Image (cartoon, rainbow, N blue to C red):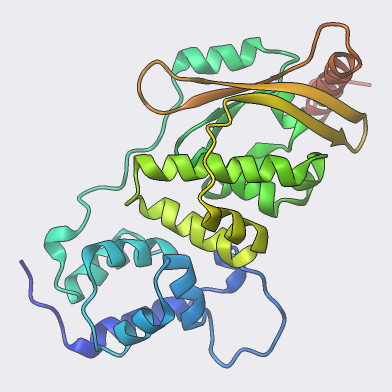
Length: 291
């Protein structure tokens, strides 16, 4: 057990940390208005950490002690590295509550990776906790977006649906699909309600999108394990695909999401064309095809 530092040190440290972050760095819109403070505002940090502005203000002013759960969400919201996180817990007198290690990295099973590769003309994704995109095949990259160009921490299925123009525009029935995705995320929350990364994700999307904020508050739940998706690809036009997800047998909570179309259907033919074009584009980009 450690003794907390002077009451104003925690507030000073939090102020310093938020002053080093821009709205863009934490996924918040930059409205271009004149900002009275450098970095993030108090209300922005409070939203990202899913705590009230009043509570966060009193934390900075040294008028209230932070619980271990609040420290954890603040560490995530402020993007603290290991040393900064350790210092945060030290000055708050919560060293004993400091996570001994970060949550284990989600890893895709080799069998699932092989299956992705074998689904040549079938878009498929492996989704982990919080609907995070852990792995994908070429067909999925051709249909949705080149996931490798997106930083790993931001490679989240529901975040992309709400914030990525290409992914959002792909869904012909975006309102229906996005609401189902929020419902699936709500079910994820029940499995690990104290997950700080989930709290940060929900806080970020609640700030950035009013639809997400409304649907999350509705507490609608849906496993979204199967259904039909309507897409409009900018090059190939409309596709109607069956979407099915299967739980991993290892108990990890990972799911394989597969999009298929009846053999010989227009959507099936368009998927084949799309995958072939994407493979050829990749080959030319890497120089493995000569003209």
